[in-house]
Length: 257
Ligand SMILES: NC(=O)c1ccc[n+]([C@@H]2O[C@H](COP(=O)([O-])OP(=O)(O)OC[C@H]3O[C@@H](n4cnc5c(N)ncnc54)[C@H](OP(=O)(O)O)[C@@H]3O)[C@@H](O)[C@H]2O)c1
Image (cartoon, rainbow, N blue to C red; front, side):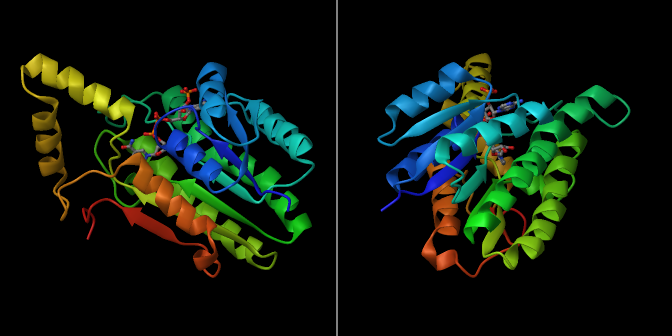
């Protein structure tokens, strides 16, 4: 049987790398889009599946479109799943008035516009084959505002409008479109920040993480792991989620209740 093909952004690190491992484990062949060849090829080489690196800076819409087409050429037009996991945070702690237009545009380009571009290439290809699944990693900043995070929050919030509209359009073609909305995920990038803070304060990393989760105030007082987020993606791509579309699954330890 022809093995399914998944297109994935953000595979080179963090949550996207866990999703790449999950997809390979589920038997998908992978098209991985991104700009960091070394990181993505290292992930690819660790996977027990066929994979293709499609080079694109996702801030560049034309390059992203070209990478999607290169991926489709590699797969013979087959695309069973699209998972958008790439994202950037943009400026942290800057209020509106201090965020430059360039900084705002940069966040929107990667977090929002790149998803529009990947969807624009993926959906017609899925329609041609009569089905498919799209899952994008949003974030709880798309469910509430936060001071100092205006651009990031706006980008994650806008993904909801994009995906709900896409879900309605794609339903008639047997394609589901959903979002995962994580709170903080203990990825290497975040762990690095905690390690630095722990070193500065002369305390253990666990202490910094405990103070952080306490400040977050979630019912479960814990962070998500990248593997848990990959597990939610697995569910949304799987048989049991066949009748779920246009939804946002929040994984934040019960912070926004
Ligand atoms: N970590 C959290 O606490 C958290 C919470 C909620 C939601 N999320 C979301 O989860 C997703 C994954 O984040 P993560 O924390 O796992 O992050 P991460 O480790 O920082 O990974 C982000 C990935 O996106 C890629 N990327 C960023 N800008 C790109 C560009 N212009 N072109 C191509 N690739 C680009 C990065 O590749 P490069 O090597 O090229 O930079 C990297 O592989 C993101 O959408 C993020 O917003 C994360």
